[in-house]
Image 1 (cartoon, helix red, strand yellow):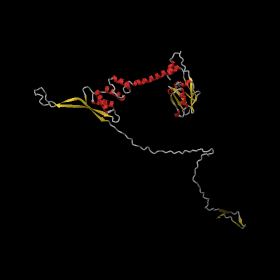
Image 2: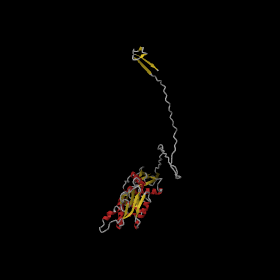
Image 3: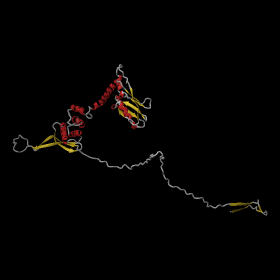
Image 4: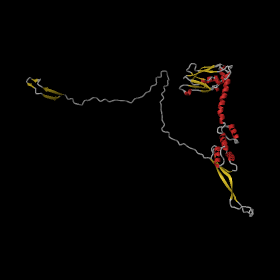
Length: 369
């Protein structure tokens, strides 16, 4: 529909080009979303949930069936869906646009009823297809990308018709092989056969010699008419071809041989002739990748705890665990060191013993208890 408004703009002003829109539906998502309608497709995006996004081809639904489809998708909510006769219209009538349901009226999706929009929409589809076909048309001008009848047409320009049952994959390269590639020697013919058949080939020039002349059998009179010598006359212009055949996926072997023979007939130079055609098998191989050890496998174990309620008074779930017994032995304090107290006495004459003897000599007596 993106081209439709441009086409409507070319109409004379006498035409009514307004959409005559109607509210088709109101769509939202429980986690919020944005939506977009463009080129007959409805796409939605749910923030944080990329898997919840939708991409709907509107051409497959009516407005009513689209509403039913969206309502059935997880998390999507239809706030409103048109229930009038307009619901029977194709969902392609939804007008292009985009919005966020978090905005005011952001969940509104409108459709058009103006018949001019329907006509211009049909024209827009054809024009868009024509634009796409322009690219495809360019491909049909090359023998490498042309297909079907277009490749037949290219072949007719160069007088290289398609062989009955020949596929495009082999016919296209053959046109090049027969027209553009050089053919004057055996190497060129080998390359051309490989391009056409996909198999290696070997072309060998052959020189044959006839019988030694003359034969002395009484038929020739020795009268000077004949030049007698012992050399044989060589025969030039002959060649042998060996070609491969796909034993695994090849077509009928007899038909394939005839195709190769006809190809050689078209490639050979004038005055040269195929002497022999030898079939040989193509190389086949089967590569087996040995098993490898990717290293240790990481295991992750997670316990799942469940609490099933059997009765209204089912107690809460509790996890019981037993801790290992723990003890600590405290040694009682003990003092094994001796306590020594020393007293020092100073006899300095300040005291007397019984008032008789005065100790004033400055002597000190120490004793231990």
